[in-house]
Image (cartoon, rainbow, N blue to C red; front, side):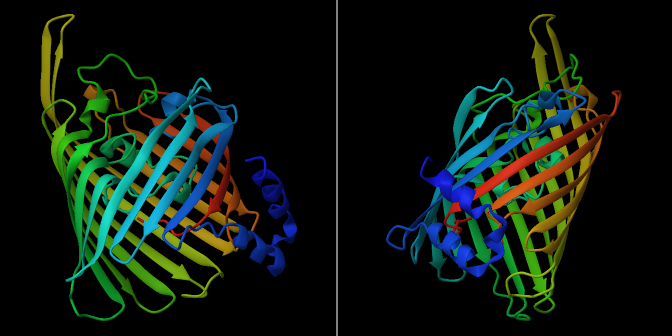
Length: 392
């Protein structure tokens, strides 16, 4: 790291707009081993101010946990690429709400690709292809923190499974601008290696809300289609389903519909202005069963919950993005998870044209049922080093 820091300081200068320095910066980041292995390193730091407790407002395991500037993630990863075999693995180091360091293996999977008929098979520990966002790492997020609707419905780490997933590029033979992929997976959710903060203002409830997430014998299915009208406009839409045994040992299922519109001023060419509008609607059904040993009482029931989010991100030029996110979840009182509405405007300034070093500012307004509204401002530093040839 000591050898890398002077280079980071150099490339962070405004002269990065000049092609000579930009080319040198990209040559430095051309990390490859034998044309097969492609390492990378992502660094994320975050800090800010909030009227509430950061750990209570956090919905995902890697959302900001404290106001002091902390390591949100130090993420080394490596991709494997050959004609028929691909793979990816990454590890996350981070600081918790007390500032102590922790770490966990996030993904480690292999893929058999280019199987005749348009198939590919993935196996290992992986982020499931559920919806538009679940399989995206922190370094691919457009906002400082996770989407609360997904964290509520799929778990604080997202739907992270140990199992296998089969994908098929459907041979529709339609317009060449149309592609459709169907995926089917099976596995068990990875056991949590850390504890996340509790819901804001959580009180004693019949059930522990974290147990509502899918845990074992989880089946997933997704159908996605993308139509490119021309080089400048495209629409992507999909439907997703997941079902299995939840943390209560009972049945649970989640259903989602997502749609995205993308416009790029330069079409398939690099650079230019762009606009992306992404939306997802989710519904879940949870059977719950809890025995309270202290008072010898048993609680059971069936619960349904709805939620949605909408993200809009406008790219003004190579160095500036502005975004707006709106999200809502209905809430389940018996889980200690109240109705919640959040709106988050953000701005990201990229110091280099390759968008490897970025400074992000985000404001969160949280309206949580039966509690005071909360206001938060977060500042995030993002640095991406190494290869961008990441296998997904």
